[in-house]
Length: 223
Image (cartoon, rainbow, N blue to C red):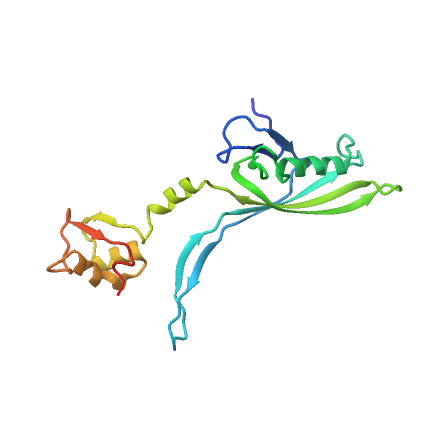
């Protein structure tokens, strides 16, 4: 039976796809109250001479980022007393320290509730907030940012499906128009005349269901 209380767990792997048994595992002392997820799409402005506007040309979808604020408490008031500097060192060893076998920090798997993300540690800001008389830290907050890490082969496979830089063959269905299809494959409905010329269509205003059209790479179809 699954436990009703599960702590955020971070697994460290030497394989980029995070398969197999984890090399190291770290469980937080206290689950975060919140975490943020950043989704960002990159565009490149394309502005001609004398233009006041600049159309945004799609570049890529950037890796998602997850930000957590983790509490390390060694006072013993809420949980069993721990050594805060040692716990933070363990956290950094699992998430961000150089591994001699793969010559880089290990690949991470974030596991908490419905969150399951393959990622790497991007940054960790540590703030110590409470100390013993001798100076030993009793409490600290770590703001950790993890960046999604997807193998190039998988990322390219996902992006290939709708890339305007690849040739697509489309089978027409009832009600479809050439300008609509140009917008789908190129993000620019005005390219319908180029598509019509490329496919040598006698009547580009009428498409027959079952008819196959070739949408060449966007550079080949450029004005």
